[in-house]
Length: 637
Image (cartoon, rainbow, N blue to C red; front, side):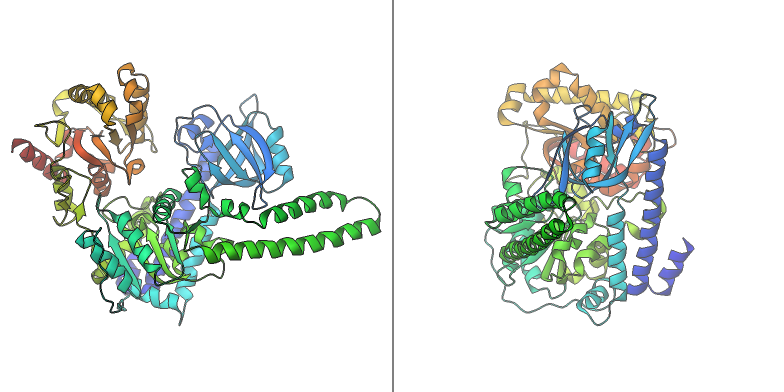
């Protein structure tokens, strides 16, 4: 850690030193994650990997075929443990294994890549026909996530490019975003948007005026996506095409769908997480296979595969004739691919991808006037530079008071890897920031405390939600103190953390009481929805299992969501129950020290928020003490 301290002392405003520090921290995270993967592969049993969403076992191989991009793929399905949330998604590397009768695991000597995955089915891009055959012939097949070397390599490359850049637009952006160079603005006559509120309108205009960088800071429920879509739409009146990125596929899907609803022609690089006809219609793969020239290309590729097997047989002259024909066909296929790609990219207004996928070969050599990064407060800085290399200016949207990026190495997080590019720019260039202040989600009493603690009391509840409730004379925010109930937490492992079964049982009891107060028929008729949140995976799993086997809650299953804080990011529900879990004599709160997670948890509720936690354990921390005081004062009004 002394290296980082020394660097900070040398020059806190030096972009070069800062990026060198980022390289060191990213290297620490890389080594830690690589070692962790090795440890899991060697020591962790299959059942634990399955429970953690890292593995499908048993898995069943299905048909193999060439997709529209001429990639050899295979379908994989699984039917057991389908209720466990898995981590397979587009672009992630995977490996296959077989398990023998004596439970010995043998890994196959190749890796594949996820093209698509849902709850029960995956499509994997395979390295060759031999790999497909090995998978299809395997008994007791399993598939698990592999260490993602490519993403790290891409991030290291982006940091190195940014460090070495001289006399270029990238060098200018580096010195503006990380150094003391001033961000510029152009003079434009303000555009009026009657359908936006005043802070949203100001934010869009600031984006339009920015020469280098603008930030849309969107606290919970303030219409950040609405504002960003409007900013993109207006920018497209001035530029022919923009690049839109986010850290996760889910976030890219969300902003892409909203842009499509606005009538924008989006080309999505990578497969969507949520698959429906609308989402698929703007993916590169679907557009490619729907192009008028594609049938000819498909026919040529099929012909080439057939000729390939013939080229290995027959006399010398016959083989030479086949090779000559194959060469002409390949030239024609290449010409068709170039023509299809040119038309797809030239006609698209928005190119949308994850930050890592912005390095895709399809985008090689392309430049854009503006880059929009959504959920920028959840993106590693190194990932942002991957896309920034391709653009002249950048717009960051998100909320650094909510969830940070996921960092697995504690020392790397503490050293500054967790601090995002958005946070740095907000801190160093306040003039480029637009804070959205009108929120449309929460009852005013639910909003007040996070507004005071995280947003300098600047948030305001829109009139239509200010006093909105489910029941007359109900208290919008309520804390159930378990101090007198002798509940105790248990430690169940480093990944799943803590569990407090008694608190979970009490939560479900309180949930049923509240359901009865509202009335079951009204809940079903009005589709009043409920969210149950805990920071700990073990508590979430326990609650899910209890709800699944509880007959009285069965009618409401479609209206009940149980998840971790991270799983609830970006979502909202009419009623939210939060289980804090921690209950110990030492006042240890661990994970709950990350107040950004608590900000996410308590701002998911529209009309009713119920928190369960042991005050004796939590009162030693200023945030929880103040939150409790606020709730007590609210209840007594």
